[in-house]
Amino acid sequence: MATKRTTEKKVALTGGFAVGEALRQINPDVMAVYPITPQTPIVEAFAKKVADGLADTEIIKVESEHSAMSACIGASASGARVMTASSSQGIMYMMEVIPVAAAMHLPIVMVVANRAISGTINIHNDHSDAMAMRDFGWVQIFSESVQEAYDDVFLSLKLAEKVSLPVAPNLDGFFITHTVENMTLLSDETVKKFVGEYQPKNYLFNFSEPVTFGPLTLPDSYMDIREELYQTMKKVPETFREITREFAEISGREYDFVEKYKLEGAEKVIVAMGSIAGTIKEAIDNLEKKGIKVGLLKIKMFRPFPYKEVAEALREAKDVVVMDKNLSMGAKQVLEGDVFQAVGDKKKIRSVVYGLGGRDVFVKEIEELIGG
Amino acid sequence: MKRYEIIIHGRGGQGAKTSAELLAQAGLKSGLFVQAFPEFGPERSGAPVRTFVRWDDKFIHSHEPVVAPEVILILDDTLLKTKTVLQNIHLANLVVINSGKSSFELEKEIVQALNLVEELKGKIISIDASGIAREIIGQNRANTVILGRFAKETDKINVNNLAEAFREKYLAKIGEDLTEKNIRAMRMAAGVGDVSGQEQINN
Image (cartoon, rainbow over all chains, first blue to last red; front, side, top):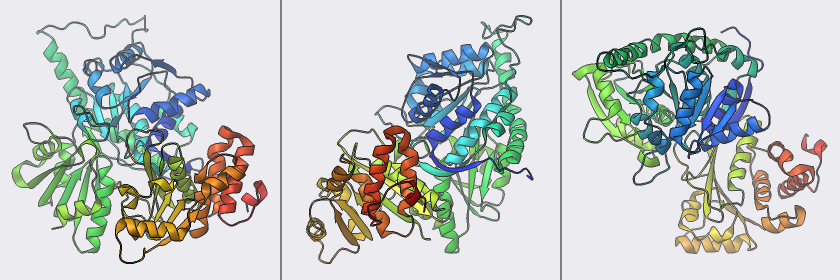
């Protein structure tokens, strides 16, 4: 951590612009895009930089999200560094090909600006889109702030290319994409050094070692290939830790599978992910002033789920409130279920569904939720 | 410094979003932690819009909405009678309104609309921002004038920081002449005289 970071720049940017700036600094080979709110400012910011000659990425303007992901898959299989961004109905429309990217082990990074899904129509934020794509072999991480959303783009790219899996960094639509916050930009050189030149492992344009992507697999092999994907996901945490350690050295910012805020010794703990974590931190600070000790366990890496770290972090907790920003129909809630799997029935777990379709959540409400 | 919150009311196209961003960037220049965000949703020209600003001397973690701000800036006085604009207006310490009416008249309107028996808590300032903007800038860019007038009332930021933020955002977009005119209007509303030019702004 002794590295001098004299070249970094303190600014105030929206999440959308910050992610667009991260994309410029990475300068990927290909970006296939189709606009959708609230992802729009990301691609808008980046496309402007490309138009200004600040990046030479091949932007493919496709006619739908299904085509966007298909183009990403084709470009990635051919050996290019590929990124895209989407939201909500865009994710739903590309759903047919989302699992294909993972099954082919393609290191595509898709930034997801989280938004509710139809119907009824709603363009505001919740995590329903992320939940819809959670079981197919995409790594999913969540950011709390503009700074984290920016940093996550670099972490995601490096992770994707090291583990040969697609990665989706998630940032809350509007709450992060459209909100100006203080943050620090890395220098272009630092980013270049961190992400490095992309060396694809297997790719179609490698004519000396021909490979097949996505062939027909019958009952004699399909299940083995799924199992292999499952095992690959298990290797993600170790690599993520290496990458976050390296990132801490260049940025001074430390990330892990989970973040613990005033958690030590807390019997009351809130588990949540995304921008709400910031609101919860303020509620916790307020409660602390009143003599009520509450901790936050923020889930940074959602898939693969960090069961071990969650179980350890909640060891001393007696009252655990798990906050889900989506509503799973006819079942326990997703994060609630994950936390339950991690800790077993030893804890009292309360489930709270919040913020669907952009419904406001106030610091005071969180205080009331757990402070009583 | 205690958390300081601002709401800007305007109509789509009047610069409420730009104003919030300029206040955030000016805050950053004053060494503050900032947040600025629009009322989330589709943007429609002419429809009422709100934008929000937070300043603090600590990093702002919360993503909760702003509901009872210290300061309310209103870019269009035809919005004054709407429920959204009147909400918590009596709790604000400062309300700056773009209007041809007097501050006294506007205060009376607000008190009547809210059925208040007492006086308003804060100071109501009426300024013919559109008129000033038309005269100095040659366009109805009331928001720069309103921001200047607000800068006069607060010690959190100063008009030089605002002017610098404006220059950074707009110089390439609208050119030297219009940028300087906007800054002149801003500085005049801030009561730092009818001066313009790089030297004064960098003071």
